[in-house]
Image (cartoon, rainbow, N blue to C red; front, side, top):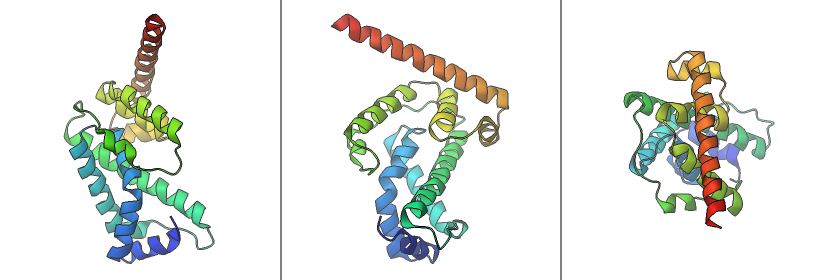
Length: 193
């Protein structure tokens, strides 16, 4: 995004033009982040919108140094946005007592552009999300937080209000399930050849 500092400053000043510009530019990133936790499209859209509302209401908490270049500022902003998105998802999962999500992810969702991903990465990302979706909700949430979003077990335990040992155990079990699923998938491919 060009002149990210100006857009962020406009959002801090609650200028709707800049808020709309930011929302439209990062909506795809937001949806992809939310889909790792919430799999019903309508619910994911609602949660993404809720996260952006939280962002715009508390944008003054995002501080960026004036001497930072646009690329660095954008990376910092995306980290800030990602944290808000993940926390909004966790809040929603808590409301539903971590019940499993049902339903698929519509194909058009994968069309949202993300300049960091090329076609091969998009296919791998899509396959990974489908594999992660098969995990039980508690394992899936811990796996997403730890492996994809980079939280540590102390942070995960605090976010989910679980013991640290449970976080570690859920991650271990998630990895075992994914490993077994991948093995079965590879074996099926070999047998079909």
